[in-house]
Length: 327
Image 1 (cartoon, rainbow, N blue to C red):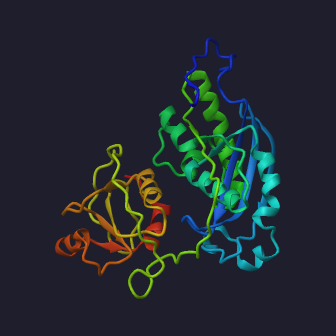
Image 2 (cartoon, rainbow, N blue to C red):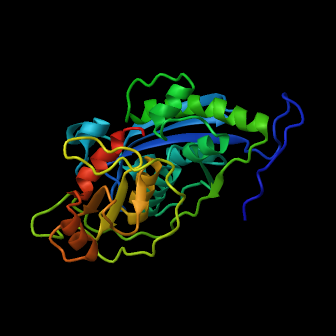
């Protein structure tokens, strides 16, 4: 059970006693977004209780597989070939995380990737709580156009030099987190801390193929169906259907059908955080259907054909999610 972090500040100079004593601002770059993907680089900025930088650390990691989207993280197979394996850096990484709250932008993703790497190495990550800066910005009511890191950075005047480079992303986030933390302390805001439950065992499986594959299902996993969960109402009006060759726009209604390589809940969370309306059913108002098997006979695919709803596979949708136009 996590303690209640709601704390009033009686004077501007007083710091909430219940706030954490230290933070580890983390960014990891990965071979992809799925359960079986691996970390290719990691960075940690250690901060004290008030958000001041104590030190920072960065490493590349040999993922022991294809590096994935090199055009995003910039790390080719040749560059990673001589990098240490995760097991080689696990102890140093752990020392950077120990006794601190893990802070990340979309923290559930970074935490899951880290926890899986430690489970593969038959170790346990020394993290008990995490804080997502997206959730904190919502608690503070920051006037952001969207929840991208670049928007948070721009709000606080932080200059980003190398997007999707773990060290620079961690630096940017640390610099944006400091004023966020101070604003929370000054306003007596409850920090949105969540418990981290480490994995205790791991079974490796062949890495899935990302994107639409010949022959229908290709490398996609089956059995990842889950009941739909209630989400907050999308605050943006529906701008209409997706048009091929153009970016997604906030407010678009997106439905998903069939198996996905990325965990479905994480994929839906990413869509919702980008400002899209995640729909559980398909109608004439649906802007886009995401499916890896457009030839299947599922009810959503059939309705998409009837209504002329645009259809994209998961890989193409993932790329578009990186640059969603504001409403």
